[in-house]
Amino acid sequence: MGKVAVTAAVVCTAAACAVAVLVVRRQMRSSGRWARAEAILRELEDKCGTPTAKLRQVADAMTVEMHAGLASDGGSKLKMLISYVDNLPTGDENGLFYALDLGGTNFRVMRMQLGGKDTPIKQEFDEVSIPPHLMVGSSHELFDFIAGALAKFVATEGEGFHLPPGRQRELGFTFSFPVRQLSLTSGTLIKWTKGFLIEDAVGEDVVGELTKALERVGIDMRVTALVNDTVGTLAGGRYINGDVIAAVILGTGTNAAYVERAHAIPKWQGLLPKSGEMVINMEWGNFRSSHLPLTEYDQSLDAESLNPGEQIFEKIISGMYLGEIVRRVLCRMAEEASFFGDNIPPKLKIPFILRTPDMSAMHHDTSSDLKVVGKKLRDVLEVPNSSLKMRKMIVKLCDIVASRGARLSAAGILGILKKLGRDAVKEGDKQRSVIALDGGLFEHYTEFRECMEITLKELLGEAAENVVVAHSNDGSGIGAALLAASHSQYLQVEES
Image (cartoon, rainbow, N blue to C red):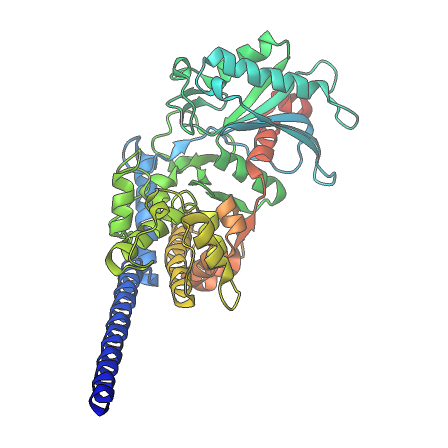
């Protein structure tokens, strides 16, 4: 009996030891996994680093590229396109003006009654979805559909909107596709993006196509300004505040436009405008520099994109790409550190499945157990269980990627201010410089916006007192109507 008891005790002890060994091994493996995941995160943080000195180098490089792009076409990664907008709204504009904002699968039509500085703007708008078959049909069909929608909208012109007798209605046309602008009222389509593919429109003057369609539906309306959304935002901002000197879009994509002195544009061939100014559409998403803190994740994203080697700045700061960068880092953590356990979640391998709004929601999670992060992991990546430690690391990852984008955006703005000589305090000069900002990333991603604003103040030092960042909500549509007003064919009649 004693021998049996001893044998049983030995067996139990051996089993307990075996279990203990398994537990210790599992703990060691688990701690090794966390250590590897943390190492990947530390390496990312180091490579995404944006110390003040580096940001100043980026700003200087932006200024240099701006000079080069103004000197000659093709002289820089920045296109520095001449917009032909040389009269920005002053707030004194009067009359009824229309706008058409075409930049995706929906377009907006808008009308505004302007009555000068002391009269509130009266406005109405309508949003129209473009049927999918028209996005790949013919130019004739697309512009006839748009003109038909405009005709219906004009027909609803009611009380409070007054067109003086004998005058044409005037329209500002925001067209957010690549265009070779020939004048304020003409531009040829270079290529379609955003799911459009209408081959017979490429190389055609988009204003001419719209004008012919308006004639076919019997509307007497003249396009007085063709602009892109960033130039429109600048115009909308200037109408409200005369100190606005630049506009930046931070949304799905990114761009900037600013007011340049006409004599500082060597590639300008014509007579200098009377105003002495010209709005430049920078197309700053295409900026690149050896000073940009790029990582292996950025390089693989770029290599696999539809436009490798292009839009590098956009690919590290805009809403289209921030969530995708986070996904790529999580992929590596899953592969090399078994971050989500022994199996990699299949959904994690799908490019662009993690959108920037998802990233923003996780980054802004203030609950004690980070339940929003857990919910996003379940809903988007189908990860059923996640520890608090895992969730905290994901929030840290979002912070690294968003902070880099926000701080580089601030450096880009500093580059514009440097080009205009408004980056430093000058004795006796209290002139304010206002930057109009628009776009979903800036508007809705609070951590991004606040980081960008803090960084700009950090870079400007004392000069920050004279620089203001102002949200210009829906600036592009309003701006197009305002540019139709500031370039109206009837201005000289009114002045005389």
